Image: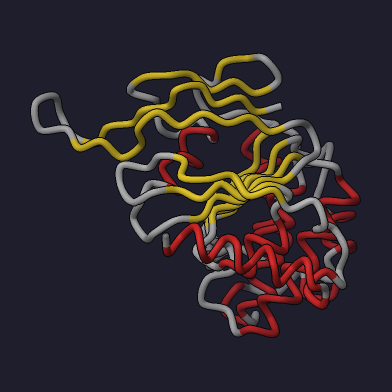
Length: 243
């Protein structure tokens, strides 16, 4: 589904450029999940933005379903660190924004997704009237409204309290099973990476290179946090990060 070949990305103009990503290779099969984790500022988000078509590679190539990524794609959704809601638009309007921009609204709308995420009763409220957890769900609704085949998430649950974060992690897992999209998650949280990633790519400090790939075949159940395998995989990821 996603192929990343010898990816190198530089920031800045020639002669003063700083390398952010240096020779990253990985692939992700359709319907599988991958977590990227590494030190702060190592280039995780840079890789994610390149997959989203928002940053051109300096060298290397990224393909999705065999087609080179040259810009944003309709079948790729991106969820950022904050919900990114427009404060002057209602929940309904924010959830339908992607469809509106693509020209599909009102032929299609996000009504079914809002129902699925338990947001129908607040569809006429504005972001200032919502809790942080609800705002994140509206952002998820907007991403799901276009029925993407690839879901990219950049630390989407940062700054949430532990219980809210775990509830939305459970929601992400349920949606991944139900919708079958390929998932790439950038996170600095070891528990989140292990709960949501079938594979975990541990990156070095900048420039980002792949330090290790940790397989996580036991993930996929809402009760995975209670298993010895979950604890053992977290320990393995921590050892790689610290080592």
